[in-house]
Length: 113
Length: 115
Image (cartoon, rainbow over all chains, first blue to last red; front, side, top):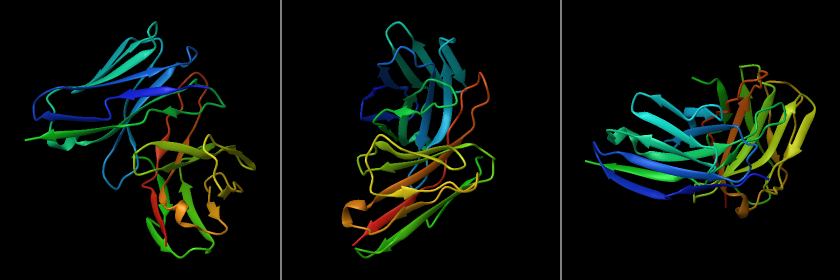
């Protein structure tokens, strides 16, 4: 089955700096890679996703890059703000009627003033 | 904003009690999932369903059971709760539309504490 590794487990950055979280996956058939943000006391919320036919996707301060050959993908947050502090999860799946997400182990991001 | 609900949000009970965690969604999604989230953050899939009368065990063995009698409802039951069941339980749903990725939408979670 799919295995997703995520690094780092904790990340502290100063407000305004950039944050990068990296994930690797094992199943070359995986073709869908979402990123979730989980704030304290809430369920994970999708913030951005990418499919395997795209190398990069951007949404305002958030971007995701995918390297299919190396089987890794990364989340980039620019101009970080205190409200970006949360736990971030990457995930991978093969889309289809029987798809399941395999999650990474999470990264706790702390944005300090 | 996803329309998926979980009740109760917090539950503290004694050992041996039977409990049911409720999950409902109003999006008409065929797929529903239960995850257990430990204090170390990691999400573990414990049950999933691809439609009415369909339930499967997930990657993490769990003593809980689930049922899917209605599309919108996916309750999780523990017949006899133990302290080892103390955890955060997250419900999610998704819909596969051919050719597109089926995004999972999560509920707010139920934090269960068994004394």
